[in-house]
Image 1 (tube, helix red, strand yellow):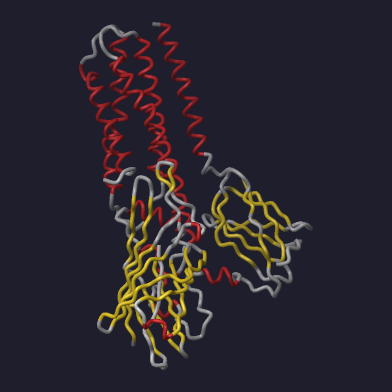
Image 2 (cartoon, one colour):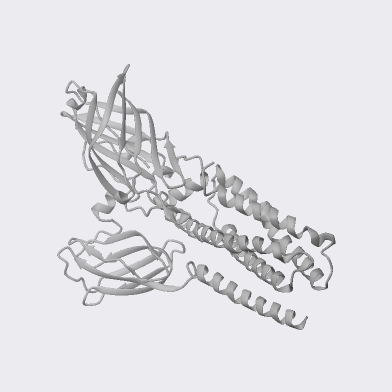
Length: 306
Length: 173
């Protein structure tokens, strides 16, 4: 009994350590880890531009940070991971802007910039970037322009905040997808070990293994669910397609993942006391099977085309 | 994604304008587990002819593409930076006399996802339907042309090629 209790404590400690690791690892991808941008600012001939002001504006928060290039035209700016608009200004050069730069939080981003000679024109992007703006005028006097097409401002104006929201949503759902795939491994093994975990003559080792794997599955499932629940919603979007079924399955495997271990603990204690599993604890197996089935259906619904 | 457009019927030399009456654009995406298409019916276009040359502009909102799966459409919007660059625009210039044959080879300049790409000699079929000019064709677009990172499903990325079928009906006024 004492040995079992000590073993269970060790398993619990191992699971706790593993969970901390797994939460830290994907979470570190979107935490406010200090990282940065390093770059070289040069002119059209490739000559370094010293004392150029480089400003990074966070698309999410609007916060700004400015540094100045050194004599060799290089600079390094420590900024949290996120999406930024970068501007480059220097005396005798046109201002240059990079409308969207993503700092990943793992390695410093290298974003070299070339400045064009000329008078500074505040707020005006370079001609090549201006062409990429959705409402850029045509260069020809006879060619039609976007204003001729009757498009609404909503359709022509970019929205950096909305893009940042989409970026964050995709990032979190990618983690959700990966964690979901990882979770299927211990889930399958847990179901497989359930065959030896019950019955009259099985030893406690099989039950301990099944319980430990079940606990690991539950922890990974929790992390998977976290990233799905916390991923930003896009206002005004109506859900269509397989995602509706995928989310509906969560109403089965979500409560199931809570109920299964509760019933499992009750069954575990009964078996450890030498009793046959009885009462509500006997629902552990069918609840677990339904939960696993719903989880598998949810995964398949967004993986395969039916 | 999107593209397109062009060409024209012969003009008698006077200035004239062309208006896009109806446009359907369909992108095709290939993945080992999925083949997907997204369709837009929201293209707007105009052509202006002057001194023997016609300039065309077509614009399509990125958000207007519908693949039948809202989750996929949102992901498409994110990966193509459709919130920052909400329109796909296509510009082309053709001589007024270009379109007397059943086919046209058009040079297209396309802006999408904050990038500009040029497609030379894109083959288009032309049919006259009453007073309208019906144009169909396929643009051989790729993700790399617009510096778009290929999305992936179950760790497998989609193919780089994303051909876009166009079906446009123009009317001269």
